[in-house]
Amino acid sequence: MLGHGHGSFNMQITETQIAHFHRNGFFLIPNLFDQNQMRQIDRLQQDKEAAWEKTAWPEGMNVMACQFLMLGEPVLQLAEHPSLIHCAKQLLDCDRVHIGACGCGDASKIVSADGRRRQQVHWHADGSPEVKQVSIRIALDRHDPTNAPLRVLPGSHVRSREEMREELTQLEIATGQHKTLPEQLFARHPHEVEITLDPHWALVWTPSCWHATGVKTAAGPRRAMAWNYFPPGGRQRDTAAVRHIYGAEWTQWPEARQRLWGLID
Image (tube, rainbow, N blue to C red; front, side, top):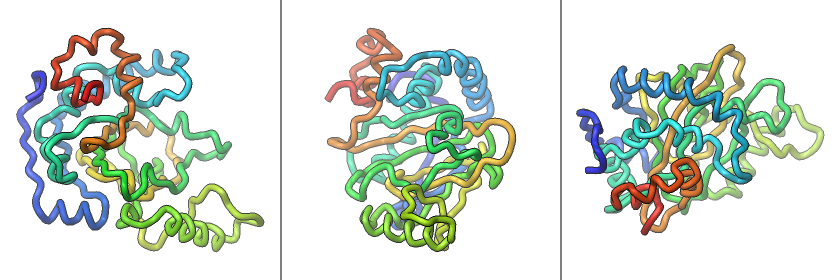
């Protein structure tokens, strides 16, 4: 067991859930963290957000990971919980994992590069079918149909990028909104699942699934926290952010924690 203060919950996933994950790319479970833990994270995020917004982060650094890591020990211990690590090992069929691609905060604050007046994320996949990963996503605010809910296309994590891109492009052209070939794709897919993510639930999924969001029309924030588990030899992401946020402190971490965050082999 890593560190301390991991709480008392114990999660066991079923063979049916494992099969659902491999077939569809996701499943939902009750939020494993109690109300006190969630309130603590909520307060920390609100306390740190202003400093995060004012910071000039190094170019190319995952700024949402920086906000996650700024929250410190409480979020590190959530991601390090032995039950979640065991779950990830089961889903990835491996005996060791490392953590990366973490994030916390309101992503809608940085998803506006395309100039759309209403903030929305286009269809994409964070990795090809060869990229093995398990992500935990927990909402801090309710992501309902007015608050840019995540839209996931079941089974798309095992299909080629070329096939998926063509299928979604044809659906986008069919909306009749384009005179030239569209670059960003938002059109509804007949088999997509729109996930209303409530803080009472947690999404376990692979971001190799093609996903987008609905349009944010509601006032107020759309906050979430998330982190990924990767198998040995898998993607190394956010080690630079860990070193940047924690400075020399990370070198004093137990070796098991350093390995879990991909800082050492």
